[in-house]
Length: 279
Image (cartoon, rainbow, N blue to C red; front, top):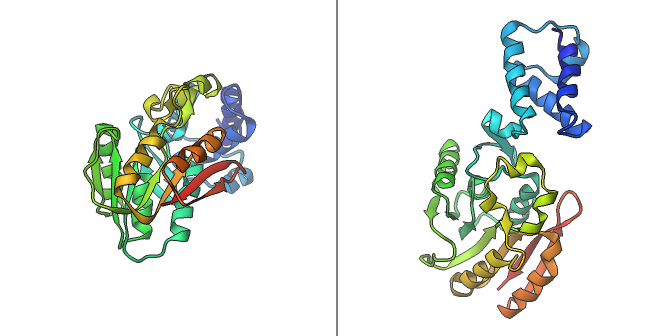
């Protein structure tokens, strides 16, 4: 089979699960990850005949994708903020939107020493990236899942970093000194929105890291405000990733905790995805 013929078959196999653009992106990833071929070379040599080993590799990958399995899980890693992170089904796959949250934190805070905590840390992509960029900062990360903590530790070890990982239930945990910055990308999708989610999210990613009750969608944000009331220094900052549909009730909730100011920021898709509060 030529690589051009495989391209046609690849698109035919996946066009019911993914958009045309997504399939094209996945084909590029297939070439790079399994054949070490640049997409430009494909266009120059579409008649290149795949070896038996090459065809087996990319066919196995295609079969996993046909099941709806995220390509990051098949490969076992993903890129976040231009760094490699291990991935498995114990934590959410880091999203490009969350890169914007990290970028906001880094752009507004210099390298002078600070104590920060990443709450609901998951794979540790936020804590690890911040520590890569701010070596002097004392970085803590809290996560309830033991398996996710193991994954996060692998990621920080991969980048030779020392991060204080805490395996604890955020609704019970209180043991920390004063902190300068809280960062969090907590669960924020309402249960009723499940019907809008793609199968590759619902079937392969931890639902506890995604969904919140319709009757209490800000349950994690309220708990983080409670923590900040006791542990966040005067003038300290909270950076949240949010569900845009809940921004107004989140701002109303913040006023009950007497935060002096807030600022909204849009993600790359022009949605209100991040909010910052100052104590």
